[in-house]
Amino acid sequence: MGISLDELQLAARNHGMPLEALRYDVTPVGLHYLLVHFDVPAVPADWRLQIAGRVGRELSLSLEELRKRPAVRRIVTMECAGNGRARLEPHVVSQPWLSEAVGTGEWGGVELGALLEEAGVLDGAVEVLFGALDRGIDGGVEQAYERSLPLADALAGEALLAYELNGAPLPPQHGFPLRLVVPGWYGMTSVKWLERITVLDRPFDGYQQAHAYRFRRSEDDEGELLTRMRPRALMVPPGVPDFMTRRRFLAPGRCLLEGRAWSGLASVAAVEVIVDGGSAWTAARLEPPADRAAWSRWTFEWDAEPGEHELACRARDEAGHTQPLEPEWNVGGYANNAVQRVPVTVR
Ligand SMILES: Nc1nc2c(c(=O)[nH]1)N[C@H]1C(S)=C(S)[C@@H](COP(=O)(O)O)O[C@H]1N2
Ligand SMILES: [Mo]
Image (cartoon, rainbow, N blue to C red; front, side, top):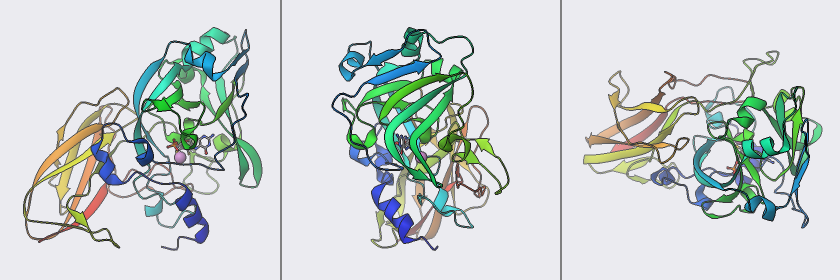
């Protein structure tokens, strides 16, 4: 496969969610996937959130002041846009995710829309920029991690400024003291270690917007911005693994397959399972999600017969988006939601 030591270095710092953790409605904190582009930054003792730009009233808020505002909690499934990258051919050099760059957190904090309303967004505003404490160099460009959201999405009432994860203060790696959480969007949108919110009167063209996180079919394709998560279903690999290959082994007979499915584009409409390829996709049982933007549990009864098999699952959402059988290659290695295949030995 040709994964380099540089990529291993990234993969050893960042980590995926072990797929057996698909069992939980809310992912325990240490099992939630982790992606840090640069370093987990040092947070100044006098940290405050600044809100400025095209607003009537600039705001500067301490964590305590934020905690005094009306609080909301949302269970949100978040997935890295690079999930599935390592399965693309030709190989795309970056964080080599297989299919585990996902997790579901119960995020607590204040509504972004309410704070922006308080600051008073002025005429001519088009986007909201989120600036973070972490800095580094990417593509030869020194930068703070920064991403923007269209104004309408920032005001929509779904996005949160979170200071809690699963009922406890945000841990350092997930953005302490404050992060943005945008339900339904790929993870890069949810800026951690937030420091500045700037309302802009023109689209943001910084590195993480104009160069990274675009779906480009070739080097000279300008590409489209990545926004919402494509549908995906994953299963808890059944049985027990072989240590090195992680191939699965299980006994013949009734086996309850289970997993989760999500889509940032619409609610999940169906999950289907197929055994040993062919065309006989069969509907799994789908449970309602714990919250609007949380993944849905699914189950499927499989009568496992002795031999070598391949299990696969796929999701479809209410807007008709589904999962391809084969990945769609792109320069950045993003949004590969090709179906998961799990080889198993029944004996
Ligand atoms: N400031 C900052 N925010 C960030 C990142 C980062 O490196 N710096 N990584 C982004 C990416 S690419 C993803 S997928 C999510 C990961 O969030 P998590 O590590 O809490 O799972 O955070 C996003 N927010
Ligand atoms: Mo990501």
